[in-house]
Image (cartoon, rainbow, N blue to C red; front, top):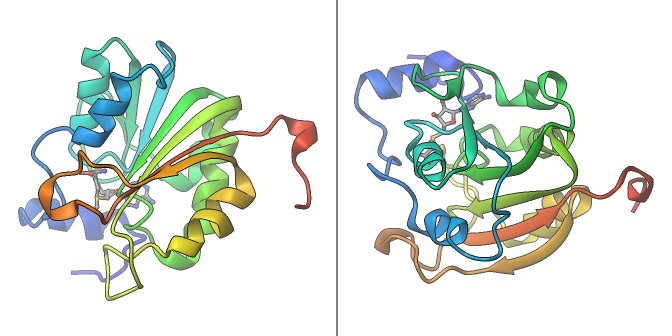
Length: 195
Ligand SMILES: C[S@@+](CC[C@H](N)C(=O)[O-])C[C@H]1O[C@@H](n2cnc3c(N)ncnc32)[C@H](O)[C@@H]1O
């Protein structure tokens, strides 16, 4: 088996071996709660990069969102096989909302800046990114590669305008306290530049 987390073969093999230990077997409660809250836009095109078995895509579609997943290792309805690093090139300024869950921790940590830039490019100006970051903590052998608290500002905050950072209380029990819900918006083009 390849150890290259940047290859689709690595992930396809984990699914084939039924070693997808991250899979919640259903939608993420924090993201469902958000979708049901007044903070969520009521309609719009919503992207789920690295969506895996697409439980969250289907949960948001059931709520009326035009939701689509992107994952290079699965074949499922409403999921496009695409490398998430190509999202901004293929779909420039397209999505109203992008929901990140456990893709940021799955990619090689040296590519995190490039990943967030790809999300930025795919989001409409003023669009919302909903990033549920997990697992918070030091880098260890991954995936999952831990997410440092400082990366919220250093990576997400330098690319997007941060709206809020919260520790959800509705996380599944093993992830309670180890997730951060980051809401951020894409700055208008003129507002971008050196910061
Ligand atoms: C840890 S899993 C998380 C899946 C899903 N978000 C969940 O919570 O169940 C990471 C997913 O990202 C996908 N992935 C990783 N790197 C990718 C890339 N460069 N392009 C597309 N998908 C990628 C993998 O195939 C895998 O399905």
